[in-house]
Image (cartoon, rainbow, N blue to C red; front, side):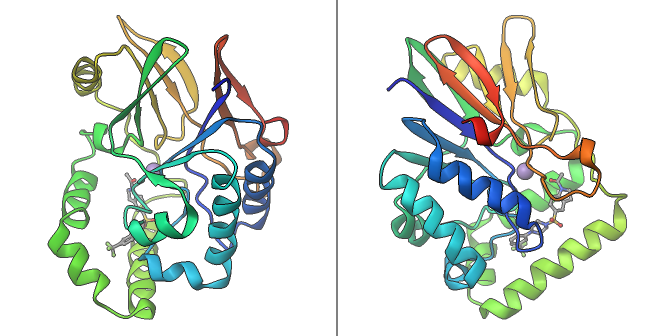
Length: 243
Ligand code: OKV
Ligand code: MN
């Protein structure tokens, strides 16, 4: 292994065609030897049976084509936490626990989507606890696909009515981040979710925060998409077209 890529928060949606196109092109052309998708690849995922809808089928095929030539690892995000074993089977992507660790180039990294670390967002943590409950998920998944899509859309509309767009996310809790790092035996973490890309050295630990992707915003200077690439030389951030 020489080149490892990390991306997250692409938020794939039919309503964001330029973002989806940039992601598809990246998946087809990346020079990485392994690709880690660290959550919120999809704007919403209401169950693996949704993969047969036209847009989702196209995204699924893009992952499958990449996974046929390099390992693809997938972590759940706070929007696509219902991705399951059928999706993994269909794409060849491997589901990754959160947090997880990966070792290469003589170093170990902690990988997380990051939403569980944002402990200050109490309403979100309550929502998270509810929707991550196996009983809730079983009940939700027992409904017809159209009903699940309608419920997720309703939740989304309610959330957008409550917040001014874009939603600003609280940051990760440093005490919890350090505890996770100690547990996994490393001092370096990669996470997404907060939509505040950047790399920061803290007291005794470092984090690399992934970028969200939005190539569809009408505001040119707000358009963004980034790949975090890890090699023996360290980390670099690339435009998807350069990766
Ligand atoms: C996303 C955040 C709203 C933070 C729900 C199944 C369920 C998906 C969903 C519903 C909510 C995402 C997808 C949204 C993120 C917020 C508010 C704050 C901090 C189900 C699958 F519950 F029905 F099973 N959801 N939405 N927030 O409105 O886009 O991350 S969302
Ligand atoms: Mn997220």
